[in-house]
Length: 356
Ligand SMILES: Cc1ncc(COP(=O)(O)O)c(C=O)c1O
Image (tube, rainbow, N blue to C red; front, side, top):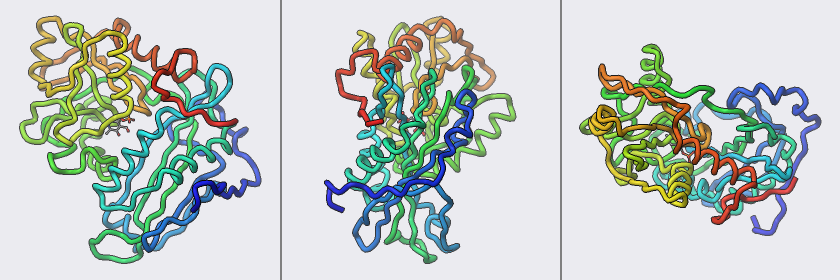
């Protein structure tokens, strides 16, 4: 594909937009009218195309079903206060997507397919970007292996797609987390920092066990000592201790490098806050809680935005927080929301404007 080529668009016969109640959106349930598709084979990407959203057909031997070469991203487009539309930091998702592709021995997606494809799709679907507070159009780029052959080997063919879903808030209430010490999410040298499907499949059972105990999610600890905090579900975590923001460092390679995490760090530093990226043990959290210096805990992620944590259960010790009084979480969320709404300065050019 030549960079300047317009992407071919085949329009759906009828839009489903008016069938959907935007005031009552559950996360990831409704999809827009179109999707982007591009295929890779013999070392070459074909032209991406935008086509009506529809089921896809595949062979039962398709490699991804058996060996799990499958990666994805999550991005949001927002309707700004002046009625224009913009996508939040999508270039960072492209970079992470291709890091995931490298780790999973998959083809990398060229920038013009990912970015131009997404922009064009968003322009076609602009009526789907919600106006309501805390709502967005969630964009899901993904890629999977399409060789039709059994045997553990990297596929020679891949399908890259982008679908979109109008969404409201992911979590409707502050979260209660269970500090997980038996199951692990990721090991050093593994695939924890790749956004690959198997990581999420592996989290389902431990999360189901935590839910049966009355919690919303698990807070993962490290695989070696079950001592250091990692992350949570689909969010990175932040703690406020003695007024400083602390978040687990990415050095172990076991934590997803969240784009919201990076944004929170930068916004907090702009606010003059001290941010520490370092190892933090659950024992340190418990000790600070007992001293009364541990005052806030919150998660940060594209889907979850800033999600306050109201309870952390560590063995038989419960740490409870007043979610109303979380000044740091509130302030950071307000600034990020204002940037996304286009009502605060965007000095780093995080918002990529799209027509429509
Ligand atoms: C495991 C995991 N951690 C953290 C995050 C947060 O990353 P981001 O802020 O880029 O959405 C996500 C969401 O993508 C995730 O799935």
